[in-house]
Amino acid sequence: VRGPGTPGQVHDESLGGGTTLGGGASSFVTTGVEEAPGAERFMQDAHRVQQAEDLQDFKRRQEGHLIMADGGPLLVMAFGQLYSGQNPSKYRIEGKYDIPVGYKVIIKWDNDEIVFMTRKGNQGPEFQIIYCPKSPVPEDFTIFEWNGNMTEIWDQFLTVIESKEDRDLRFFNQGPWRVFGVTRDEVQIALKNKADARTDIHGILYCADTVTQQPTLEEYMVYLGFDENTDENFVWIPEEFMQEPLPGHFFQYAQDGRVYWLNAQTNETVWKHPLYEKYKRMLHLARVQKPLPHWKSVAAFRIEAMLGSIFKTNLEDDLEVEDAQLPLVETVENVLEIARVFLVDIHEKPFLVHVLKRALRHYGHAVKEKRKVKDVDDFRNLMSRYSSLVSQFQHARDAETKRVATLKKCVQCDELDAVLFCDGCRDFFCQSCFDRLHARGRRQNHKRTLVEMGMCSECDDFVAMFHCVQCADLYCRDCFQTWHAKGGRRNHIPIILRSFNSQTDKLAEATPAMGTGSARIVKQAYSPWFCFTDENQIKLYYNIKTSECRRDKPLDVINEPIEENKGGGLSAAWAGTWGANMYPDPEEQKTLPHFSPETAL
Image 1: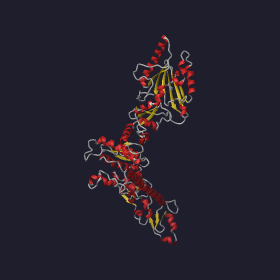
Image 2 (image 1 turned 45 degrees about the vertical axis):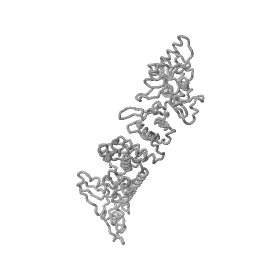
Image 3 (image 1 turned 90 degrees about the vertical axis):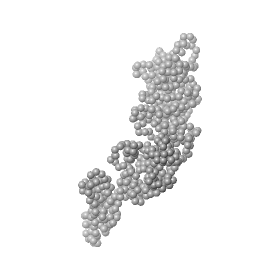
Image 4 (image 1 turned 135 degrees about the horizontal axis):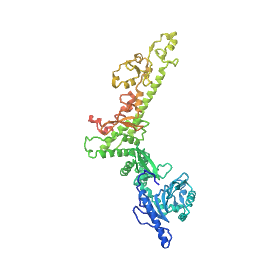
């Protein structure tokens, strides 16, 4: 009945009302059985005892609730849940019995087993019956497809078993609801007492929706032990629990209305959600500290909860030591977590990781010194400023690209590359167009300047400023610095293309074409590769978009903070008092004895 490879189930056998047999019990109660004289009654009881023992053995292997019903035992594998949604009347029998969603039961008919299951369908409840006769022939097994019409699937089932002429069919005269125990008091009471919901608290997440196999917010609440009466201000905790992505090596599956997870690294399946302990601890802490349901208060609480667990583990004995080393807080996991706290999409704006790392460093010292986490709104504003700074560099890059496209071609024919600049016309011309337009009249006296409009051989975006003798290539300023920074290329001798560069006082409009470094800065700001250090102070490189982690430095550009001396006025938003100096690096303050932490706030 159950697929292989799923974890063992933990369950709660304390059902309000009902007659059940726990593991290892040897007594049972029969109900609704007519008196039978002498040997016939003895044979009936002996037959039911044998059926109960068979199901009891199955119960020990699979777990479930054994109920002695009319004429034979039932093994309830899952009581399911009460339906909550539109058209609740479709989930009622005779107006007084509830049809559970996710109900699963196994009954014995002589030596045969019959499985009955329910689920929520598109138009109402759906049912399935699986007939498993004691036979070595696979064709004897019958699986009836899910059907929303109980009468139809019951008739299909009776058609199959009526072929068993030597068998007693009077057991099925009760009808499907009674045969499968749906209308029994034990099942109805278990539904109202949320017997399966109590199991969730002990580590099982149930999912009533068998179509999408995605648990709802209410099911996550039950799984965490969320109390809607006392925890109404903390509803954001199960919401975050539901929305946070799983670790990369975990995969979620559902079977029989229960959710489990596969650890791809160990190839093991577990019932416990990989993030269960994190949010269970967060809920417990929220009940103690009682944060207000406002985004500032919630963000500050989440940051304190995240960093507090780090300091409690690493600095329990060192909090009173003045020079105690700060635990490693600028980790990949903490950056991803604080990005969720600030609702920042670091895949779209990876450069904000630098602000988040600065925030972790600042809040780490606050938690270490047992100060309240503040300045949440200020760091959000700081991220807005940094985004504005990168946007300005993007506009500068676009302006350079547009200017280069204009300067590269002759303004007259717009076909050939420009080789001359006319000081009088203030335009670039190819040789033929310049000679034709300046052959007569006052234009004959216009002075010309030879220009090299060769493009950089690496990026092909900007006008070349250098010619490397050894490489025999043209480079713009940024590409020359990048490709000649290490190794033997550091000794290469460049030739400066002076006929263009020395005339910048006359060719003011051509200055952007020489490159201001904006393209390099923008490329670096959007690079997904970041450098982190581990607990041993060894560098590691992490890709924000692909989650790839490596020790060796990748060939791609590493995302570094925009330097304070880059861009002149452009970088004032980050390098000025509102940027880098707004929250000074606590490690740098050891050399500044006049600085106090209060001046940074």
